[in-house]
Image 1 (spheres, rainbow, N blue to C red):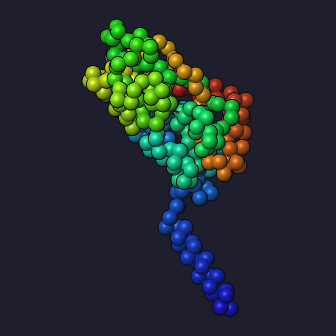
Image 2 (image 1 turned 120 degrees about the vertical axis):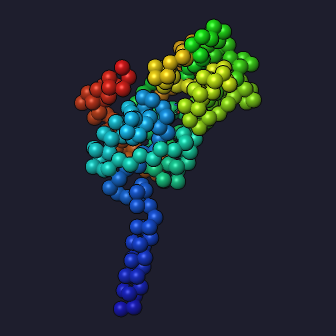
Length: 249
Ligand code: ARG
């Protein structure tokens, strides 16, 4: 009798604890939480209604739909995404994230990659001097913190020449105001930003080869398999090509 009472109390306590803590968190079976940094058009950005929208969002929606779950989007600093995944605040990172060896030690990536990209150099439209990454010696370079653009810049140039920003938008503001000479960033995003803002150009094409994956916690093999399966179905059904057309033309 006593034991049962204790058990009931314990269960009630657990229930209340659960309700108070992570309702919208990944522990909620009805939801799937995508972490992203919504300043990376056309992969993810804030639309006119201030909702997070883009190619990655449509992919995440298709995944959520296939799993019969509601998609929740957490918009945060790009630099914090892997930590958020490792502490299970989010279920997956869909953020134009490049598959790298270092990251693969910490998280799993969906396979095969869902997009091919690479880094490029952005300068002001009237810049005649910088024609590619080889002309950046001694120049001030802006990057988004924790991105492969940031890592490339640090591989090639001294740290004091590199300005790191949490948002891509800030890097473009700095370049627009002549406080830096160039930005190193993923080529599809550079192209879209330039289209939207004007006054900038890319030079030299892409100088790295990169592939994007959806990052998932190492423990969550089940979700990894599900995501790979949904992505395969998206490709086979033509839905994936439809999304490419929708966002990259
Ligand atoms: N592809 C680069 C990387 O993985 C940049 C990604 C930035 N993504 C974003 N949503 N801001 O490091």
